[in-house]
Length: 262
Image (cartoon, rainbow, N blue to C red; front, side, top):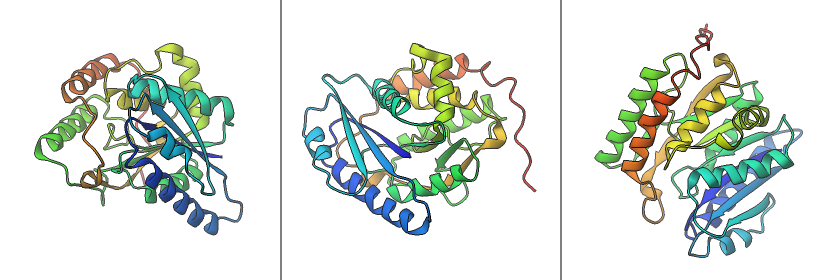
């Protein structure tokens, strides 16, 4: 099973289009695979004030869709945790979990590129803006500087990790790694405020694997395609990221350098 986890807050303009595009990509993937994986999209409607739930629930394509609702907005960390708890209860260790934003900036055309890499034996695969061939399109100077600053900080603190992009939420995980991560951290799985929780999830998951089982693929972030206003509280996210970096220094200290590529 391939699970697509979609935290969503006030995404009525985007969610149905995203599900339809994901369905189209799944159909292409099915065509290429002799034994296709079933696909299950899990939408976590995080207390939206608009028609996010109704739009997601109206989907009628081939992939399975489950909509989970928070009565009140609880933030990205809680939405991710709700979705992960559901998937871990439903799924098997050999399943794959793909996470992406529901605002239109993460294109579903990359979903099954992540799946193909996971199928090669990787445990964690990141869609990276900074890998060769990756791009950021439509990102203003302020947000670009924040992203670059985060990249430099993550690379400085975690030079042994073979990733260039730690803060992008477009990723693929082997479910067994996420299960080990939740088992280890329990209720403390996601503690960082704001969008810093995406980096926290990545770092805690990396503890449960080896660096040669971690990789990335290039992707283009299309910020101009974003529907609605940004929901990222910039100051809270920056402060949360700084807090996370110092907190996480010891988590990966015993991890070896990745195997060199021939």
